[in-house]
Image (cartoon, rainbow, N blue to C red; front, side):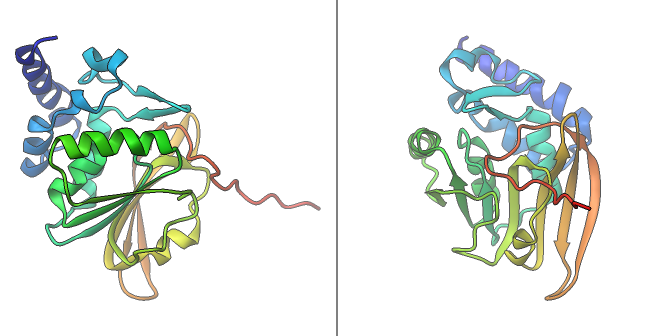
Length: 220
């Protein structure tokens, strides 16, 4: 696919997929309209970089549909001064988008090869305000907390309370909670030191984070 074809596909993605999926924040539309998503997609799928589909990354993980990525970014309401935590670096594309909106991104990935590939792409595109770390973030990541925004890019059968503790007052978190095929996208806000609000946004279906906790089962 030529550079011109990529630009046309990117334009069509924004207009036909993203804008029609209740993404109306012009900052987000402009950002995904210029971000080089094709460079973060594994080579065998590069021609599908702007298709309305999950793209396999390996290890049973995927890049989300472009419209889902954009919708989650919109719901997080990232501000320029925000410190952001991303659980699940994947290809590095979402980290690049978050970095364009906020002050600094800490992105945690359990698969070292994903981190290595993401590092190369972020460096190639001059993205400097992302710190990539290899580790298991399925129960949160407290090394740099509190965070103004947290995005968990894989699903969780249940959301551990430890994630709530990582939010600064006024902070926002997106978590995808439940089991396939119907998972709930939740927006959690920390209202003050002790209180949180939770809103259910819509349903989707994503592979779970590795080592995600299962719901407790009572034995009688």
